[in-house]
Image (cartoon, rainbow, N blue to C red):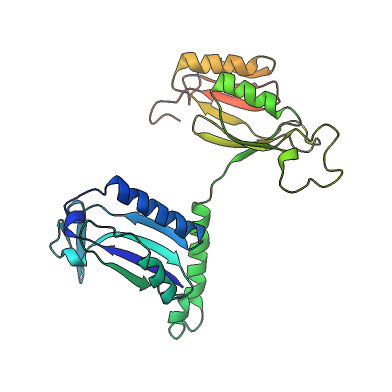
Length: 283
């Protein structure tokens, strides 16, 4: 079952009093234990009600009232959403929680409605189907998309080059011989045991996945990575660095969508488009 665990507001939370380091540490450790138990779905603290508003509904009328609101014991200062086996399990976990306030405080546990609760109303299952579709849409909206590059044996060299010339930052890298599971026999060509099995790096705000692959990947085709750089001097430097040992497909020049734009394929076979941002409203 899914429950919301509600931290009720107190005089100190409504006054905007921040927790001390000891409480922050204790709550962090409690949250970590929830995550390790596999039950925490989300959780956040809320600012005092003086920074919020209420919207009252009365027929077709909508009345907006700015905070603060007087009924402190009815206000919410924070919450978690947990997936638990029973209300009893949720209660036992709440008992382990550090007191979230400097004074006496309350935490309330409320179960979520589930579609089974509406079975007598949703007799044809149409509402359940709609909810399932909405959940799928939300899941896809929150999905992350990354380019995955295969360097066919020269991943280390490419990473070093991008670090030097593009300021790439490597966040994760491990090799085939570091895999916790053995690589299937015959999957790798001789000498690939020490090649990069998987790595993650960023160029600017773009996070990219990469690998040496299994030795059978061909050259890059069908796509490019785009770098939008604010500085013309830096854009030219990056373009020249990528062109060194590679090939210029379109020299840097002014276009109708950018003051400076060019296309280059680097010496690893990776296609890049380097550009300055266009003015607002420009195509």
